[in-house]
Image (cartoon, rainbow, N blue to C red; front, side, top):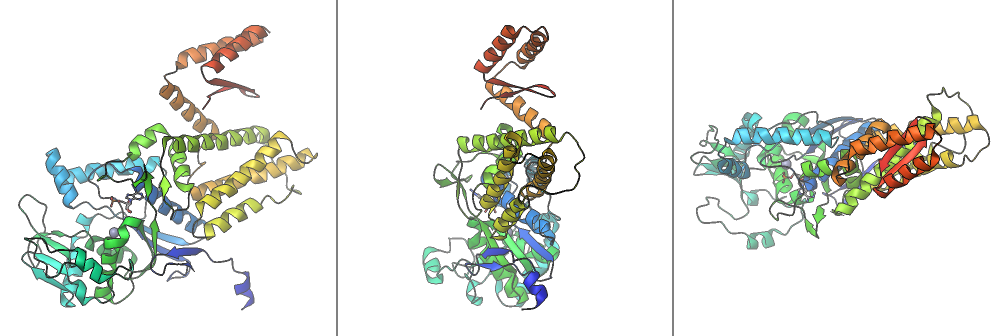
Length: 492
Ligand code: AMP
Ligand code: ZN
């Protein structure tokens, strides 16, 4: 091993669904990661199951950038499909208008959840020429055939089919029928192009007017924006089969090159022991969750478990995550008060303040273990609290210096997880106001009593001041007298 190799940081390892192993990440172009994530079908509101998957890949992108990689991040919108056509019909709306409306709604929610915008968010309707070219290539290669107005991929012509899902083709065939009216030759063949039906969006094609099948869009878009072979392809577990399997078949049969080197799949968010999904009806809309708790709290909940595990949703889990965020922000507020904008001179530090960031990176290097990363974040906050409550060293300057050093790590970890990006006072005030509304408390009355208490304290009427404090506490309002006046919060 060369000297430089022995000094390079340990590799980031990623679990690859294709090989069923954790592997060191080795991008095609050194220092650069090309990442494609299957995005939402914009026929309705996204739910927090979808949001978990998008948050997982948001953190993957953020961490890769933290590690110094240049990341090209593409996440598409499926804006033509049966569900959109049906929803538009029901709403008496044009499919394109309905899709636009839900792209807009998604982008508002995504911003609220702190998802960084992908570098490119292509829509199917914007890549029809690329889709046509890819279908033509598959026809020319003899792995696809036109039938009526449709075009199908012929699975039996591509021997590697099912290498991602490792399903048994005979079992699959036994479970599938060619439905009456379908023009495909074999049960596993899937549509690349669907012949136009009256009243549906359609485009001209050499084999007849129609619209793309679902899977072909991702093959066309990833090639257009990331190249024939790229580094990481992501989505939820449910996409392994058939969607990702079919993407691989299309792209690799056309290009004779691997589509993605690594395939990452996020586990399901579950509600009442079942995958959250619109078809089961057990969904919580992202927008409704964001009305209940702050976007950062929702992220904290998503990231509390490793991304490949399933994650159980409950109201309590969500409230707990927000309480945890409150603890983080209260700590930051206290640290900032203690540091008071003072200039911190360099000098010896207490302990090893860098250990927290190292533990954080070690966890993230291990297949993006956000649960471990959050434990490192908690360790950092635990130590800051220790310094605030009972400084472990007598030297005041060293305490302040160490506290400032620990404080400086917060945005680095927070930036990767997409949390703790607000000024503490502003975040705490928003949380408090939300709880005031949710509990039906009278804000004006609370403020009136606070003013009365301040006046009583000025007059040294401590009996009155304590009575007000106790009365407020009974309705769940807690007071903290600090250097910058009295702060109040809602107990939760
Ligand atoms: P869709 O709009 O249904 O295509 O889903 C968008 C993304 O959300 C896909 O990557 C799905 O795999 C993912 N997804 C759907 N339901 C869940 C769930 N309950 N938990 C986690 N991810 C999900
Ligand atoms: Zn896709």
